Every structure is written in C-alpha cells, then in structure tokens.
Length: 421
Image (cartoon, rainbow, N blue to C red; front, side):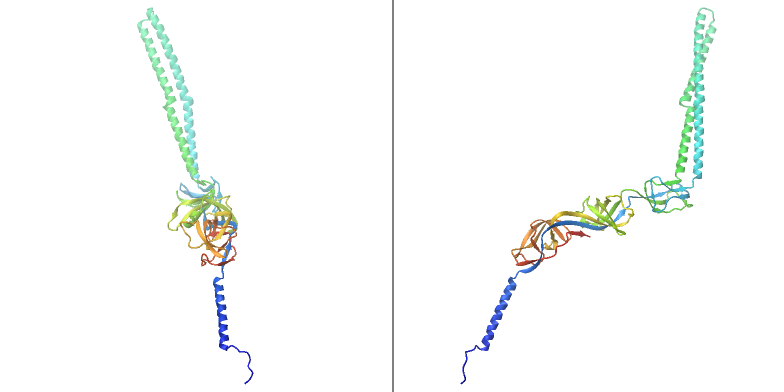
C-alpha cells in the first residue's frame, strides 16, 4: 500500500459549505436593501420673493364713438379732414354750399333793421306828440275852469246872464274831454297800440334772423369735442341727405383697456392691482396700467368676466382703438416668503380649505408628516405661513409613506414667480 496523507473532506461537503456562504451573503444583501434608506428627491425650504401674475389678452376701448351727419340736405363744398386726423372741439369737418342760406340771413337782418327803425320812429315821434297834446289839453282845461270861476262870480253880481255861465260850463266839459282823449293817446303809445305792434314786429324780425343764422350754421359740420376721425364717407360735390352719417369720430377721453378673464381667476383680481401692457406690434415699448373696475356679471356663454384697466400715464402714440394687447397683472406679491412647490403637497387640493395642506419632511432619517398653513398660491408654488422652518428638507416623491426610512436628495430650486395664462 502507498503512503497515506491527511484526511480530506468529500467534494460534496465542500460545495454545501459554499452554498451556505452564498445564502448568507444573499440574506445579508436583502436585509441591507430592505433596511437601506430610500433616496427621495427633496427641496430645502428657504425664504425668497414670490410674485403671482395673470396673463391675458385685452383690447383698447374707444371712449366714445360718434357718427356725425348733416341736419340739412345740400351739396358738399369742402371736406376738411381725413381718416386718422385729430381734431379739436369746434373744428370744421364738412362744409355745404351756403349761398342761399347766407342770402336768407341778409334778408332777415334787413327786415330786423326796418322793424327797429319803425319802433324808434314811434318812440321818437308818436309818443312825444301825444305827450304834447296831453299837456296842451291840461292847459286848456285849467283855463276853462278858471274862466268858469270868474263867470260864476260875475253872474252872481249880475254882470253876466246865466247863458254865459252855461257857455263857460260847456267849455270846461269840452276841455276835460279833450284832456281825457290826449291822456288815452299817451297811454296807448306807452303800453300798447302802435308801440306794441312795433315791438312785436321787432321781435318777429329778430326770431327770423336767428332762424336764418341757424340754417346757415347747419351748412357747416363741426366737431362736438376733441377726438380723432375714424371713418370718412363723404366727398366734395356729393349731395347729402339730412340725417345721413358722413364721419365717425372717436371722442377724446380716458383710454381704457378691456379684457375678458376666465371666471376661475376672479378671486385673484382686485381694483388697483398693477399691470404691464404690451402691444404685439411694439414689443419693446411696454407701458403700465392698473385695474379700474371688475364687471358686475359673468358672461354665461363664455364663462368670463370683463375687467377694465386704466393707463397710469398718457397713452403712447402708437395706441389705436380696438388694438389687441397682452396684459400681465400682478395679483399677489411677497417680498420674502417661505415657498414650497405644489407637487410637494400630499393628496388632492381641498377646495373647502385652500389654506391647509400637508407634506413629508426628512427628519431623523425618516419621512415625517407635517400639517401646514398656506398663503399665496401660484400655478406651481405656495407660500408656507406655518408648519415648516427655513432649511427643512421637504420630500417631493408622492409614493413615500410616513415613517419610511429616507435619504433626501436635494433637487434644483424652482423659480419664485409663476404666471397663469
């Protein structure tokens, strides 16, 4: 027999040992994987500026659009404006042929002069003559009365007969009647009669002059107020009818911008909020405005409410009526706020309690549930008023459960501002 060495284990026993070792390694790896903290995307809460805005389309509202036309029928002699021209109040726009109206005015003025001359003649001649006749009648009556007194004395002394007394009494009666007639003539010249007729003729002549002047004025169409000519539909030589619109004028006034905003954003809008306005044709020339008023009713068809803006300064020269504009309104602003991404909030938003919410934070290597009080919201962010502190890591993964072991992996911070379309 040959030499014998140390005893060796059977091959199958060695392989079984190897399998046990592999099983132990696998179990240890599974346990490690099971108890290893899950890597979860997170964001660190920090204070930063927060601004919420709304963007929508608006148009320029015409303060007042007036259609101007002639009140008389005639032939156009001159058109003094073109479309786009700016005019001042009282400026001449259209002139009709006015020869006949001008002649009628001259004729009426001549009739007035004639009536005034007749009245002046009546005042200068008739009244003084009547007054002189009255004075003469008064003197005659006084003389007759004195003669009657002397006659009565002489008759009493039997120097005159009673016949003479009757003649003197008759002379007094005649003088009194003449005095009364002269007084009536004076009163007629002062209050009625010829003077009244003459004054009536003057009044009638003056009214005729006013009518003729008004008809002459109607041949000239003037601007009722300062504004700009939007439309011109008349040319020289054209015969126009009374009441037909010849020009359309945008009366100058406060420039307003109108926007139809979805009713969902009505709660965010308030009077006085600032806005940045931009015309598509002039993208490098923005200007500012503010909310002036909100519509009293919601359009049931479109589900929108009308919002009116007023410019903060004089309107730019390029602004036109009905021009389309883009408006961005600042509906909420915080100089410094704890800002949280909305995707960090757990569960669906509660419409009955929009100021409440909950998140998971990484605390002691585990996910801990926190109840929050929220403030200003944008499309993707929310202001945290209570429940979190600066520097805490808020988990963004919605699949993580409270109490789960986690390791926060910081994500890039979001932009502080958000805009709603």
